[in-house]
Structure formats: structure tokens, C-alpha cells
Amino acid sequence: MKAAVYYRANEPLSLEELELLEPQRNEVTVRIEAAGVCHSDLHFIDGLLPHPTPAVLGHEGAGVVETVGEGVTYVQPGDHVILSFIPSCGQCPYCIAGRPNLCTVGNRAAVRGTLLDGTTRLRKGEQEIYHMTCTSCFAERSVVPESSLVRIRDDMPLDRAALIGCGVMTGVGAVINTAKVQAGSVVAVIGCGGVGLNVVQGASLSGAVKIIAVDVSDFKLELAQQFGATHTVNAATDPDVVGAIRQLSPGGADYAFEVIGRPEAMRQAYDATRRGGMAIVVGLAPAGAEVSIPAASFLQEKVLTGSSYGGARPRIDMPKLIDLYLAGKLKLDELISRRYPLDGINDAFQALREGEVARSVIQFQVEG
Ligand SMILES: [Zn+2]
Ligand SMILES: [Zn+2]
Image 1 (cartoon, helix red, strand yellow):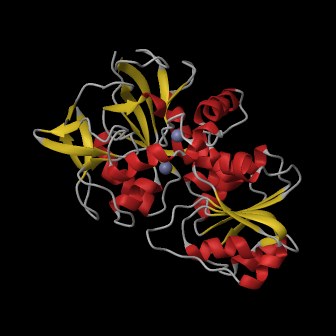
Image 2: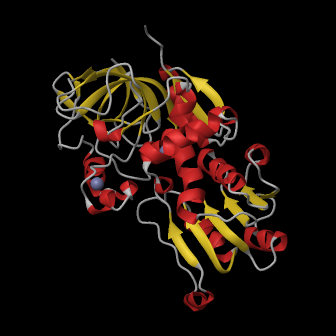
């Protein structure tokens, strides 16, 4: 099968033929139909975060089940699925407590670049190729743990379903699951890329009365307005982001989301939050980055928290997002700026790097 292989930071992905081994116990082979091009993949490609190499990246995908390994009961061949990039074991304390986005089992596999049993299914000749987050969807097929799959309605287009696998779940979930934004609130969103637009959209779904979108790109700020932003701040021309948010929302925002992964922006989100409000960090920071806040501000009783994968319980939340889309209440079509074949993946990353797109989708050949 054809796959895009990551060998080294700051080099293009290499398009190659790989061998995909059979699924083992509790594993499933999925034919990938669409994969989103996300900033988290770019973090690895640009060397901001370490990853075992060589590896097939890609963590925002959807496809059709082809074959199932021994013991698989949740899906059968022909089922349409979204890949969840945090597999949940169902047995650790986090999974049992209903917080599978914090499952430690998947995390260990993700760090090692393997599947859950510590081994890999990708080969180039004799060479072992690593997986990313047990998903590796920049390839025509992927072997994934059964626990990484979310079965979805057949009438949901798979290119838009793919986006739910990371960007939409992470953004909308941060608002609905993590922050639990109350109707009538004022929400600020710093960073309006693929995830940030979904924070804006989540705030709109939650009934926020004022949604202040901040970005350095007028293109993204215009998109943010389509997704429900009531006010925009271009941080390129108006660098006093905190002042601008506080001017629109005297006393500060009820909730401020950071959706970039930069310590300065995290601090801005905290400073833009009112007393007793909540600042939520959604962005993935480079390894080693630190953020500081004024210690005296603790008495303002602000809550500063992170949100991982939108606090998702994937098999509950993702089908709901699909229902919202098919009911015309969730925007997905507008998220897709461009579509590329797998061969065009390096162009897709370059466009993302240059801030030209919200989301690009790699679209695979549809067979059979
Ligand atoms: Zn992502
Ligand atoms: Zn678990």
C-alpha cells in the first residue's frame, strides 16, 4: 500500500510502498478514505516534538473496516469508522471514571510509536515502521486497535467524518465537555485554525452571547465569523490582545481559550479572563515550553486548565457531532479549505505552515 513516511524533522514526507501486516488480536484493518492535515502532525514534521522514526503520521482519519482480528466484536467488515487518536483500554482508572481521553495505555503506545501490544504492523522490506497514536492514517490502510474505533452512520460523508477525529472533537469538546460554557457567556478564542474555529463553533452551539475571535490572519477571522464569532481582533495589527478583549468585555471574558500552543498566548488567555472565570489551554505546546502567571492572581479564583481531545468520550461524543452535522447544526463543509491526493501531502503541510488554510483533507482513491 502507498503511505507517506516521516523519516526526519524538517524534511518532506516520503511517498513509498509499505507492507501492512495482518491485524492481531483485538485489532482491525481500516481502508482510509480521508485524513485531515493537522498542526499536531506538523509539530513532528517541523521538529517541535519528538517521534520515533521512521513513522507513518496522521491522526485525523475515517474509513471503512476491511478485516478484523481475533476477538474483535465492536465492528465488522464494511462498517464506517472514525479513528480516535486516543485509544481507550476500558480498564484503567481513567477509562472507568468516564475520562478515556486521559487513558494511560494509549499514551504509552503513542510515545513508543507502536500499537497497544508494543509491536508494529508497518514494514518496508525488513525495516520496521512506527505508528502514530495507533492511527497512522496518511496511508491507504491502517491496522488499529479495536478500542481506537468509533462506528458511525453510513450516511455520513467520510471526508467530513475524518475532521471529527481530531479538530472538531478537540475544539467543540473543549467548550462543551471541559469548560461547560453557559448560555449567555462571553467567550474569547485565541487562535482560529482548524481547532480554534471549532472552539468558536462550540461556543456558538452553547449559546455564548459574545464570541471574540483572535488571530493574525484576516482569512481565518472571516471564517471565524462564519462559525459564530461576533467580534474579531487581528493580533498582527492590534498586538494588545488582552486589552482588546477586555475592551469588548469589561472585566474580562467568562472563558478564554488558547488554541495555538504558545506560552505567550496562554498567558494572554489567562489575563483576558475575568475574576472567577476560566482559561482553557487547548493548543499543543512545543516540548520544553513553560508558561508563568502572576502568583498574586490566584486570589482572583480564576481556573486555568487544559483540555485534551475535547474531554472526549469518543463513542458517545463523536456520533452526537455527526447527528448535529446531519441536522444542519454543526458546520463541517466550511472547514475544508482544500483537498489533496496523498501525493500532494507535502503541499498540504506547506499551505498549513503558511497559514493559508483552516483544514486540508487528504482524499484517498475510493475502491469498490
Ligand atoms: Zn490533530
Ligand atoms: Zn484506559
